[in-house]
Amino acid sequence: MTAEPISERSTEEFYDELASSYNEIIYRCAPRYEEMQMTMVDYVPSDLQPLRILDLGCGTGNLTLRVLETFQEAEVVALDLSAEILDVCRRQCGTDRVSYLQQDFHSLDLPDAEYDLVVSSIAIHHVDDPAKQRLFNDVYASLRHDGVFTFVDQFRGETPGIYRQHMKVWKQFADSKGIPPEEWEMWMEHQQQHDYHATLGQQIEWLRQTGFQQVDCLWKHVLWTLLTARKVEE
Image 1: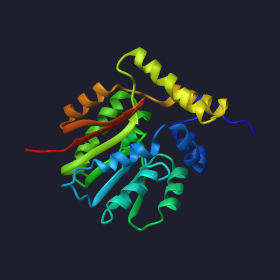
Image 2 (image 1 turned 30 degrees about the vertical axis):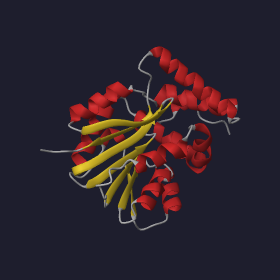
Image 3 (image 1 turned 60 degrees about the vertical axis):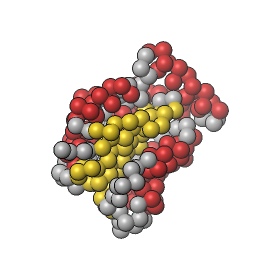
């Protein structure tokens, strides 16, 4: 059976199809994947003991598992667009401390002041810049006082030249891992159709405009960048 062209598939359909093989693919496709997620939880402020956590774009649950292990008193809501990938997350996490929510980032319906911590891993770039700004507002509203939003994602370079170099270095990494040319082309076609990379400077500014404070870049490698922000109300 011939695979449907990427351009004719939605983001949901793309990840539905990849659900069973996502873990295998992401570990060979995303440089320093473990390191970026470990750094995310290591830099959650020590004075925050989250009891309610939201994982935005949870995928197969790799970050969900990490926050469950780190914050052993917490309950986690795992949210994703893909029903198939949520099923994989459910099987991988296997605990009554996790509940599952199928929602689109374009139309999030989150309760106000519900979460102590919101995390996300390589997901937010799937919506365009205006939708990112709306999502930041949704996350801000969903956090309790002193709550933290931390996410790692693919970011554009601050200049076209830096961005081109990002893509070149990423391709070198893919080649070193022996990624087949057709798999690389699949990701590049998906990126062209469904990914929206914004710069670090833009996203820091959007977070501050939303009302977040203590905005900082904690880690960066090529495209992949980790930001943190806190809801500190007067």
